[in-house]
Amino acid sequence: MHRIQELAADVLAQVENGVTLTAALAHAQQQAGTLTPAEHGALQDLCYGSLRHLARLRFWLRRLVPRPLPEPTVERVLMVAFYQLAYTRAAEYAVVNEAVTLASRLARGGFKGLVNGALRNFLRQREALNLAADKDLEASTNHPRWWIKQLKQAYPQQWQQVVDMDNSHPPMTLRLNRRHVGNAEYLARLAELGMQAESLGEGAVRLSKPVNVRDLPGFSAGHVSVQDWGAQQAAWRLDVQDGQRVLDACAAPGGKSCHLLELADIQLTALDVDAQRLARVQDNLDRLGFSATLLTGDASRPQSWWDGQPFDRILADVPCSATGVVRRHPDIKWLRRPGDFAELARQQATMVDALWPLLASGGKMLYATCSIFPQENRDQLQAFLSRHADATCLNDEQLLPCERHDGFYYALLEKH
Image (tube, rainbow, N blue to C red; front, top):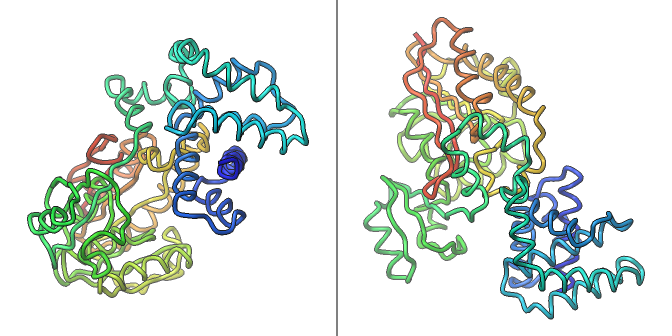
């Protein structure tokens, strides 16, 4: 167990230094060498869980160890162990013993008694510690104070629902390739394998329990993909028709591109600034049996890649704060800073202004983010409309995180 505790503590350190959870986990697994499936699962649970509950873990730490330790690594080991004791079924004695041994080794023999005492005090005082944490804004919500302030301003009625969803485990939702299979048929195939699921809407099925994608019937044949139901709305809302020229700007990893191709026989151009991420788009296209034109380029600088032919549809899935997908990426709430939104808004405005001239008259562009804050969404829409007299907003909608989907914003614009 101490091997997994050490790796998890290292991941927390990397995230504190600004590294994404995905990158930090990949680095930890590379450092560890071969991990068994059980170890891999345990490491993921410790990292994701500790970051979901990070503010509460920090609160407990300062209550039990009031003065910051000269060895930050020992503090992270304690927080990982707190998470195990509070939120997992790991044997308490094993968690304590392994954490004491690990901390002592990392601190070259020091802090053995302190770690042992802190963990045993946690077990004795758990109820009182929880009551105290419930009265602290950050510890009770597991979000930064500034984040909660902005959330309350934007959604005075729904902010608590958003917080609860952010701290929950995300559902595993499937997108069915309607060229091959429908909801009723696929639900029957899942039932045959003992997998419970429910239909969310046309082409969307949510599993009761997550499974390995390799166990999904028809996955390798391209009959089904994993995609949140909120993300699936993008392709539906863009209203693609056979024969149209369509641009998916910022296309990687390709889920929305592939969905567009499932819905109509279109000439699709998938653009992304990152060539390595664009390779993932090709992998998805290959699995599903589709073809598209893949271009490496910056969506805000079309002069470097556009052939001059207008597009009938443009999906502008712009860079954003990703504040709508926190339950899938709990590091986001600790990596974001209040000043990020102004810079993101500037990038978003630059991109949509650059893409608008590429749209044919009568064409439609879908502005899309996986954010929940108005600065990136409705505020951005109003600013865009004020700059472009030839643009009309046909509809827009803010989806907040809920049991059925993550948080997204969509605005469908028509050019006249």
